[in-house]
Image (cartoon, rainbow, N blue to C red; front, top):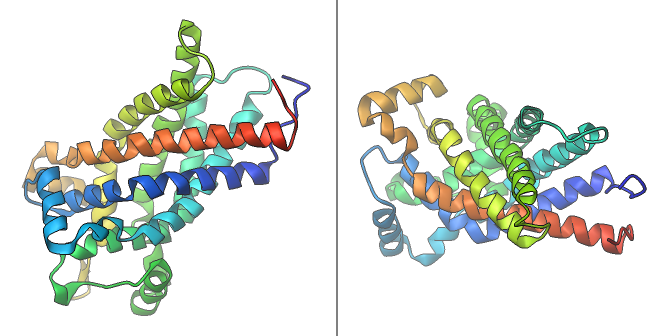
Length: 296
C-alpha cells in the first residue's frame, strides 16, 4: 500500500459531491415525503401522504425541490465527504483508527459541511413543503436560485442560515453515525471472511449504516425541518430553537412523534447511503485505475 499514490484532495471533494448528487436523483421523492410527514402535526401514514400528493399535485410533484436537493449535495456532501476522506487517510497512515476516532472525524466533517450547505437546505425544505400549503400561502419558488434570491430579498441574508445550529447538530450525529458505522461495519464484515471488497460489501455496510444513522438522527432532523420551514408571525417565530421544537412535539404529539417519518427517512437515507457510497467507491476505484494506474 505504501507505494500507492493517493487521490488528490481536490478530487476527493469532487468525487464526494458527484456521488451525493447522483444518489439524490434517485431518492428525491422519498426526501419530499419525509419532509411532509415531519411538518404534519397530526398522525399520518406514508401511504396517505403519497396518495394526497398524487391526487392533489400529480406525480411530478415528487421531484419538487430537486434543484435545491442537487445544490445541497453539491455543497454539503462535497464538503463532508471530501473532509472525511482527507482526515481518514491522514489518521490511517500509521494504524487503523478506532470507532471513536472515526466518529469524531465524521462529526467534524458533517459540522463543516452542514454550515456550507444550510442555504440550499433551507430552500429544499421550503420547496418540498410548498405543495401542502393553501394556494394563497405558497412561496412558489421557481428553482433553488430563485429561492435563495427571494429569501435574501424578503427576509435578509441571515435567513439563509436559519436553523444552522440544529442543522450542524444533525449533521454531526448523522456523519458520526453514518461514516463511522459504515467504515466499522465494512471492517467487521471483511474480518468475518464472508465478504471481500466490492459492491456486495458496500451495499450491506451501507444498509446497516443507514439504519444506525436513522435511529440516531431523526429527532434532530425533525427540529431542523420545522425551524427551517417556520414562518415569522407578527415578528415572533413559531419556535425559539431546537430544544423548544422537541419539547413542543413531545408535549403536543407524544414522544414517539420524534421518530415520525422513520420509514420514509430510512427508505431515503438507506438507498441514499448505499448509492452515495457505491458511487463514491466506484469513482475512487476508476480514478485510481485510469488516472493514477494503481492496479491491483
